[in-house]
Length: 558
Image (cartoon, rainbow, N blue to C red; front, side, top):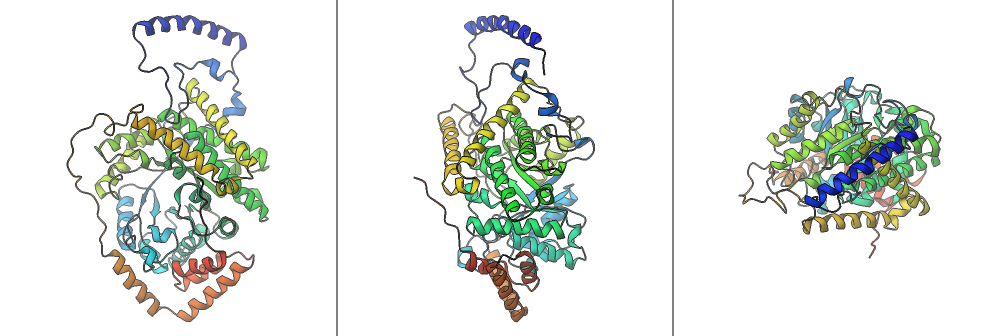
């Protein structure tokens, strides 16, 4: 991108400047001998045109809305439309969560994001013995279509897009959403939103899996196929690096393992007979925004560029939208501290800037008290206001990709892309992401990175304000949200009433039909939708699939 003679001049002048630096350091040494990012990438003292001398503007950067989408997926980005402000929320019962959604919409939220409790995430009803003590604790408890009707009561589903963080039983929750919309008079072709539906990262980092890898991949491709014909505006998967990063990965690992999962999903869909350009435009991604502001901006740009190249060169995608990496971002929960929790507002503001400067399509900002409890109404309002201040007061939304051209940003974008590609090649050699997961390779790489970071914190090599430096005496936290302890018992009563009231013969017939579909190669989505419309519960539907598919057992690598 630069004239070779000019680069030589820059190199010579840098040598002269280095003499000045050496003289300064001899009198005033730098704070440390080596500087590195939170991911452990080396940070040079200065970056110049030499560091980006090999860059080809059109091939490596291009323009917003054009291949390779390094500078963003839309030609006008936030000058046309701001990102969707989508606060991840859900707790206790469907009624209480519905009230929180309505409150957030009144406060200016522009999309919904549903958090489910642990029993729902692993396909158990609230009255299952394994659900004891967990009902409504980390998200809303959904047992049946009746709960979903309450969850979206008074919220027209043709007017709002909804993200549902659900993976192993994603097909069941999507079926309930489609059924609720039908009861509202909204046809499925008008629904907009996303299901996370990323089971590979559950095996890697999160743990809320149910079925073995093969039937899980089948369920995912069944959803791709069904939605491409019946719910065309729905994003059928949100391939998630967020939880990989929360588990302790570095930024390059987050990109690498997420895109490796994406490659596995595309491979599976193509093997199932789908055309890549029929489903790829509805793939979406989900990344973490950490504290290292500039590294994070580079990470988002690198991910977009690398995915575009993979889709064009590896899968021969032809449609532009097949090559676009669209992503949701959540600020990093793992960076929040229980100590001096108001400091978390500042951390979230930095992470918000990283996501916006990196070109996110939607964003959740964590609340200051989330290291201690589910967020209070006041805390979640401050978190939403953080997005709104960045959107309307900071000025960073007025110019597209404003950090482009920075020697540092461009150099780090290329470095993260290269390191991620090295991981993807290694995973290919192991037989792809599912096999690498089964072998424990990806999990081990993340554990090693998490161990390195924790050692740095515990040795004070890396400072975390309020944790290992700048500590103060603090009293007990106040104003925390507490979930009503009677939620679990009330849900059990509700389930009994449901089973007494519904047509149990119809429920049995539809569950039997689902079982037959599972035992063949039929697409199971129509059968799941029929079952939930008859008020078969989440646990009953997942129970049928457990009987046919079995359950996944995590490999242990010592």
